[in-house]
Image (tube, rainbow, N blue to C red; front, top):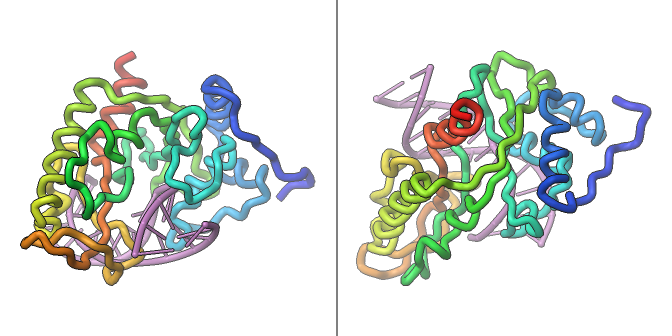
Length: 230
DNA sequence: GGATGATCATAT
DNA sequence: ATATGATCATCC
């Protein structure tokens, strides 16, 4: 708790101000950052799974909305928190966007959601080992990333293979085992949620909504390329 | 221990 | 239902 009023963060004016704020929260605990905003730190994330992401959004001045736009639209930058272990290794895959299951004829990589979402990402690593109490977990050093040509090639290859299956009415044959760096997994409230998809005969049927996710190996490669190689 | 499939909160 | 934010729970 604090005797001070909650911190207020307007949107960062430019990329430098955004990075400045990101560096300013690096090394600090979730408890400290929550206190500044007068937020309660949950004991765990059984229910509030997106809590850390929303905390960081507010700290950096991102728009807290459900709009299908980048977190920092005026900068064209997407914000992603990344749960990491004590060694800085990603512990979870990263959700990118919902996978389109219908109306995808003629959809090209250059215009797809994955390409758009990942054009520029501000990664914020956050400690997430189960043994560390949530309130004590710390924010790591920020990383502003754009896919390298080889990284984009991998993403594009996986995306095209997934989209082809979906277009051919084979969405239910897709499993998370497929894709080198980009996989497709359920993305829904529960297994009973339904959305339209292309069926085997080109018809439309109801199926579980899916999302694109980055494998941990890929995000680890991103972190390594910045923190280790340089 | 790590990855896959399932799930939770909130706003629109 | 779809969009935002992800982590949980279970299986191998």
